[in-house]
Length: 495
Image (cartoon, rainbow, N blue to C red; front, side):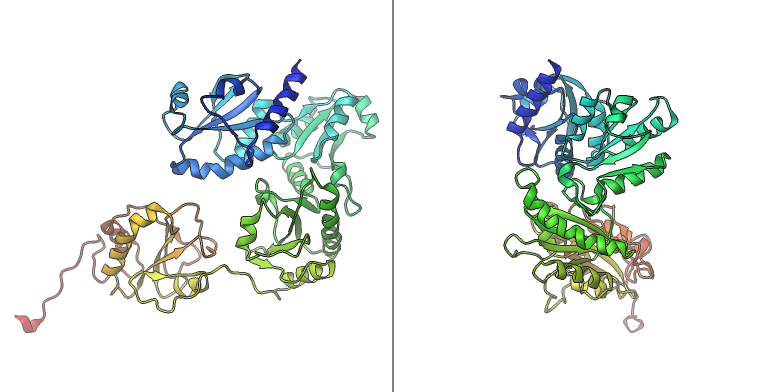
């Protein structure tokens, strides 16, 4: 009966899932749908809420991972501006509110961090053990029949030190399926002795890497690192949910990656990427490879300046260890791909920089910065710079604009201070600036441009001035250290 309910839940979930894998619940369907899931996480949100907007990509990414978990776990959302009665029913007083439901009943508030990895980890815990116990050959074969990487620990006892270390790793690595067994029958069937083994699914197996990887060191930290590295393999599918897990320098081939509808076509190009990748790695070079679906990662392609494709052939974007971007402009072939990799590694390719045109005139009090002028303006070691990263559509940015203009006007005669702004949607924002919302403001003092300070103060003109008067390297000529305007000195001829 339990298996039937689980299968029914999976069928219903697949039928209802939205494009981003997050179910949409309303007052009309909540009671009938919530009972179909053994475990489900529901987000109560408001579209205008800034915290909800920040959570959205993390929540969607977690939903994509958890949909493929064993057992799968559903994530849903409720728009409280449309479903106020439903949100009141569950005592929602702030946004976003995350609640865990089990078998149709409210279980508890979600207490983890509101990031993808934390959501995946916490919900996997709620759904079941971090590692599935395989007691029979049938259970082991079912575990290995999935189309994702699986790791099995083979132990003499569940209480052994190696088994305990293994379970700690399983609890820490959220995107890999784990199982363990003490069954001699399972070990015999899988031809394994005690130890930890990573199994690649049949659809991902190739002649360029081993289908099974045995780990000899069961130290928790070393085993975790080894599993995370091998789980990606020579060339893994890179998605929005796991993109941050790949090392750099990284070369990504984008095409119609689809292991559900077209596994043969997907592996046709993946094998060519792997052939080149293995050759490069065998030369001792540290380099990473991945494939991605063009539709899912279309935003990333735009950020890399790739807007056209050559039929079904892959297009390629790369990142070096400093996170600089490189786009392959030649039509894809194995030979062209190999040459592109070597040229990037040898610093023979010009990095791609998304930038607006350099302004013909830049004589207003607020200086306009584009990616191409970032170094010359913001990283000018002779000036302290206060820079606002904004988005043209941002309401908060529009509200700040007249105050920011007034600030720049008041400080336009200060010789060592620059007030600047940059459209972060139209220009690449360099490291170490971290822009996740708008407006984001940083202060970059001269002599320390590598460590800019995020401005967290008030956004009134006098509050900006007080901050700059205190922080400025050489002080402000027209203001005291407390931010008060200095009185003009009287000319002796006026006496």
